[in-house]
Amino acid sequence: MKKENNANLNSGLKLNYRRTSLIGFAFFGILLLWQVYDSWCPTFLTDIFARKMYGLSSAELKAGDPSKILNVQWIVGIIMACDNFAALLLLPLFGNLSDKTKSPIGKRMPYIMTGTFVVAVAFPFIPLFFHYNNMVGMVIMMAVTLIFMMMYRNPAVALMPDITPKPLRAKANGIINIMGYLGGASATVLGIFLKLSDYINAPDAARNMWIIEIPFIVASILMVISALVLFFTVKENKIAEEVKEEMELGEKLAAVETPIDDDKPMSKANKNMLLAILAAEFLWFMADNSIGTYIGNYVIYYMNSVSSATMFLTIIGGIASMVGFATAGAIADKIGRKWTISIGLIVSCVGLMIMCMVGPSGKVVGEHGEFAFPTLLYVVWAIKGFGMALVHNCSFPMVVELCSSKKIGKFTGYYYSASMSAQTVTPILLGFVFNATGAWRALPIYATILITLSCIVFTILVKNVHAVKVPNTKGLEALDS
Image 1 (cartoon, rainbow, N blue to C red):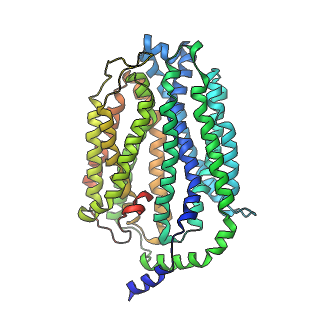
Image 2: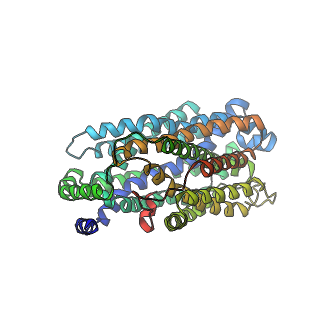
Image 3: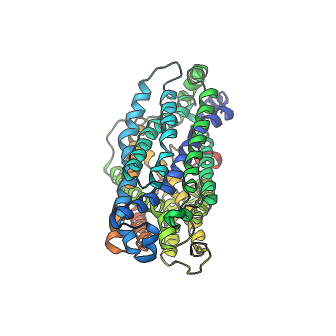
């Protein structure tokens, strides 16, 4: 009887693919900007601090005393950690403010539009100030970008669930994340044709500002276009009124499929399991974010290769991740989420161990003396991308399984607090590790150690509890991760 009721309710709900894709333009802009920011800014910071500390560009230091480049990475780490620290403070703030906002254009749209246009103006000034060696101006523009991106980001994320019934949100988020991937891919294409290494490795007099300026200008223009498409096609207040009945129907269906458990305190066993999952999550995010933050500098200053290799790594890792997301649910159905995550961590660990053994090729191919990029690292990124997709797909549902439906928001906060804290700590910590060791090889070794510890903590302390309240996702819904 319950299944019949669910089916009858579900028959009244149908995802609006066109509207969902249009909402996805917000995510297109977000991931486009972050990809440019994360790919270019660590190298900008390295070069400008090398000049301030040693009076030489990073290219000159690389040719003369490359160990000094490592000595500035702790400062780079601190500044690059600021976006995650800002997220911990500002995302809840702007999320709460937008919840309480009422305006003719909706409660989320004022923040999305304001954040977009301020960021679009500030963003191109980052490479401009860098080119003219204005460290203060560059850091201020980075700060403005971060603050107003946080104004934009939470309301943009909240817009979809505002007008999408609960049972359809996983599938809708899959579509939105595809739009985000397209934004990130756009930035990656820019990095392939406008090589940051061509700028960094050139003498000061020969540095072409437009190599670094064009990606930021294009990102700003595309971000504004995506926001305008969103503004003119998604009338927030009108749609909210139109879907009111569907939203109520979605609440009923959610209440049937995810019944509220009793209000008793968590058992000691479940508390220990939750802490073990969060501890393992903290460690694997520390590992993954360390690679993401420093891989651009690793390629330019250690591998002495062209920066476009980093972009190809991103593409390969992204494709492997999508394969991992698409298959993780089926694997978890067979062996459970615990062992799916454990396998993902082991696979990622194997990839990072291979990375530890790969050094510069020594084969000169570039006009500035760059070496050929080691092909084996492309394999490493495919392995790591697939493995971490298995981890991310199954980890959040395991946390949610440990609480009643009344506490899902609270437990979601635990999950994201652990991940954001890890991503705040790890760039700074690894920067000090670089400074202490004087070796770029510390990057894969650091990440390998953390992934290994994560796997040990998770495999030993977490039980293989099969899904009850939250089914394993497959197909389009898997991209909700």
